[in-house]
Image 1 (tube, rainbow, N blue to C red):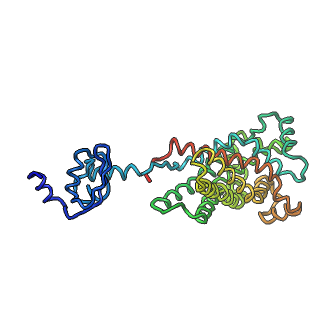
Image 2 (image 1 turned 30 degrees about the vertical axis):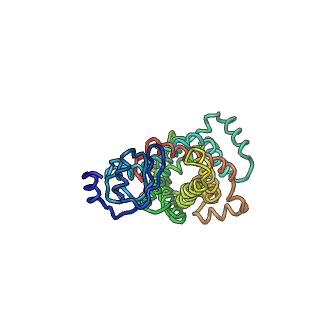
Image 3 (image 1 turned 90 degrees about the vertical axis):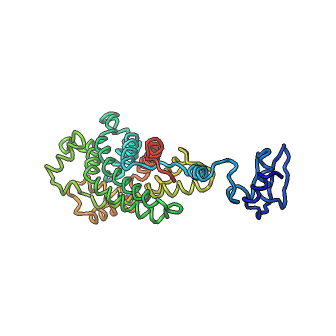
Length: 364
């Protein structure tokens, strides 16, 4: 052994006696009870692969020459990039869904405001088209979009912003009960904020059913809001606000909280990845939950907003509706489901695509 080798042996941690696997000239050799510095010296003949106990752990230079910088690079490489929604994405996604499902929403309102069950969904659709033309199915579209940009934007902004803030640094997903509470708070707030636009939406959709002398004939949503404010006062703008807020809480729990939980469960099976089919399946489940939860309040809210003074309040409206039988609270359930489930699916599909392509990048 030459002087250079002796010097290396003297300054290296020779007291370490590891098991070293060395691949040299195509052969794997197990070196037992050989000082680590000697083994490294042999490995320099052809250091294709060696492992266990030498290099950085034994105080020797890393054969790959990375050092601390390469370790930091490997840690950064393990960090995944994630995109989160911007606060207004929920409103935009809901507007896109409303443009597709507005005719179903209009038919639902017509069915719910019948004093007696005379027509089903198909018959109501045919009557509207026969009397007023196909475009009559889009009566009140401007009010529907105005409602989405107040009600849906508020509830999505509250839910997603707070959820993302609470999830930072948390171990695992948010518990379901927290999602329910957060959805209820966001939905209640959004329902109250969106009440004026919701009332104008219901009136514009139901206007074509009224006799000519009773029609309000609002030109668009802003005209409706202004005329209600001028002719009936600020208080009337929030007529049915209690029911709208309560319904908003229930539908947000059914949509947002149940969507997050359903998506979590679907991904947890390992059978599906985070793709558009997963979004469709989770949102379909959420739409069914939301329809069942909010239908009784939806019926009462629609009756209150469309009333012309015949109801003294929420309780009186509930009593009068109950006189028609218990199933009156679920009048229009099928069209409501046919409208709300596709609306929920489209909303979350649009939202996930907005998040994917335009969301805020974060590292997790």
